[in-house]
Length: 246
Image 1 (tube, one colour):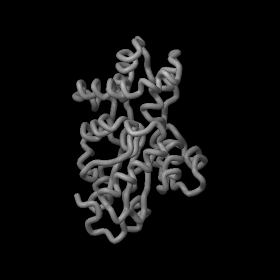
Image 2 (cartoon, rainbow, N blue to C red):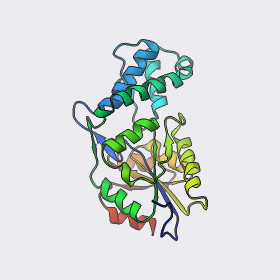
Image 3 (tube, helix red, strand yellow):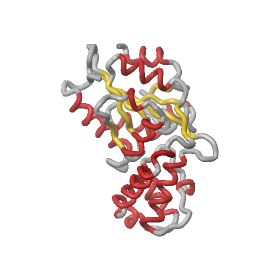
Image 4 (tube, rainbow, N blue to C red):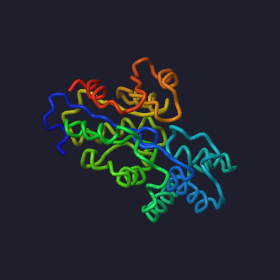
C-alpha cells in the first residue's frame, strides 16, 4: 500500500493494541504475553510464579510493567531497570518459541477489521503505538488476522523503544515520516486508557479515546487537556472516517 495514494489530505492513524484493537477473554486472557513476562522474571531474577497481576498495569508499557512488578517482588528499581535489555530479550525469545499460542485468550474487538480496511483503502497511513514489545505486538496482529491492514513497511512506537508511552507517539511519527517525507496534515492516536490520551497529546497527535477497555468516557476525558474525542467503541466506521474529513 502506498502511503499517500489518492490523498489530498495526508493522514496518519496509530492504534493501541490491548483494549483498543483486541481484548483479552476467558480464564487464559492474553496468555502468551503474560507467560512471557513470568518467563523473564524466572530467567533473569529466578523468581518463581511471579506475575504481572501483582500490580496495576493497564495503559503502561511492557518495560514499566517489568520494573513495577519486580519492585513489588522486592527487586530494587535501579537493578530491575539495568536488566531491562535482558528481560525484554527473554520475553521475545519465549513468545517466538510459543508463537502458535498467540491467539489463546485474545480476540479482535467488534468493528476493527471494517475500520482498518476502510482506512487502508483510503490511503491512510496506519501504525501501532503500544506498550507491547514490537515483536509481540505484530505477532498479535498477525495471529488475529489484522496485520494485513497496516501500512507496509509496518511501523509504530513500542515498548521495545522506550519506557514512556508519550515518547512512543513521537517515535512512531518519526518513522512514519520516512514513509511519507512530505509529512502529515493530521495525526491521530486511538487508545482505551488515560495514558493513551495523555501520550497522544504529548506527542502532538489528536487523542481518540475508546471505552472498550476498563476506563469510562469520563475518565478518558479527564485525562485530556480538553481536545480528546471519545467513542464508545470503533463499530461506527462512518463516524470515524468523517472525523478525518477525507
